[in-house]
Amino acid sequence: MQTKQIFSALLFALLIIATFSCGKPKTVIPPEVLSEKEMIPLLVDIHIAQAAGSLFDSNDSLRYSMNEMVPYILSIHHVEKVKYDSSISFYTRHPELMQRMYEEVINELSKKQGEVSSK
Image (cartoon, rainbow, N blue to C red; front, side):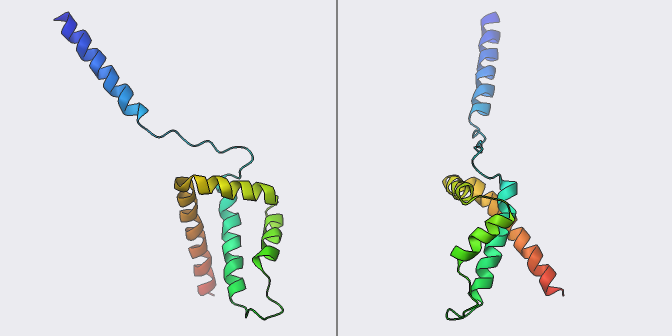
């Protein structure tokens, strides 16, 4: 009878261990990568710049390329290009984080669109 209780307790312990060990480990963001909180406003501004740039005629002398706009946007956010590139590379390799981040980017862009539309 005591062996059956020990076996049941061991089986239960193994079941608990198996249940919690199956979870995906949390991805650690390295220090050379911007956090999601830092990336979201940066990506919002980059997408706004892309949309604004697409409004101009390709022959328009006032039109700026993304190659000209991105460094300016990075400087506004006090981010070096190397860190931005490392961050994009990291998040591209972690699509679950990229997706979560872009859900927030879309929310922010929608808010901004609503603000502009209500004026």
